[in-house]
Length: 243
Image (cartoon, rainbow, N blue to C red; front, side, top):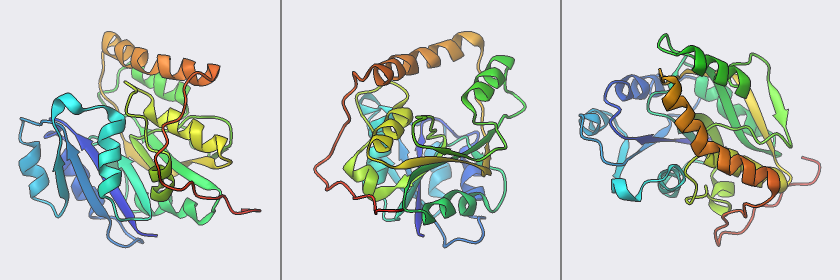
C-alpha cells in the first residue's frame, strides 16, 4: 500500500531533520510521499525541510489547531494510507513504516498506532502518563471500543479520514475523538508495538498538566456522548461484510 506521511511542525529544527532522514531510510515499502504542514516556524525548520524531497505547506499560526493542520495534510496526500508523525517522533528502525501499514491488509482496520519509546529527557511524570495510556506496551491490541489512538505515531485510511475528518474545533485529543467515531462505524483500531518511535517532550509537571487539561474536556464529552462527529461531504466507506 502506498503511504503519505504527514508531519505537523512548528519550530522543530532540533529534531525534524533526523525524523525526515529516518523516513527516507525505510525498507520493505514503496518510497513514502512526505507532506510537512508548518504553522509559523522561525527557527530554521523550513530550511531543513526544503533539504528533503518533501512537500511543504505553510499555514498561518492563528489558524492552527491540531485537527486542522492534519486535515490540510490529508487533503494534499495521495497515498491510500496516511501516517501522522510528530516532527520529534523518530522512527526506531528501518521497518517502522512497513510494520505500521501492513495492518491495513485487514479491511476492518481504520487506524493503527505504534509504540512510543521515551527519550532520555522524559520526566517521571511523562513516563507515568505514557505507561498509563498504553503506548509503551510490547503487546499488540485490537480495539473495537477503546478509543486510544495517537497522531504522534499513527496511520489511517485516507478515504475514511476524508469522510470523517479530524475535528478542527478541538484543542486536544483530536486523535481519540476520530478513533471513537470510526469505531462507531464498525471499524477497529490496532496498537502495533512493532512500529516504534522515540518520542517524549521532557515536560515539567505544570506543562504536562496543561497538555492533559486540553485533552480531558474532549475525552469527557466523548464518554458522555456530547461530542457530535465532524463529517465531510465525502461518501462514507462501507465496511465489507465478514472483514
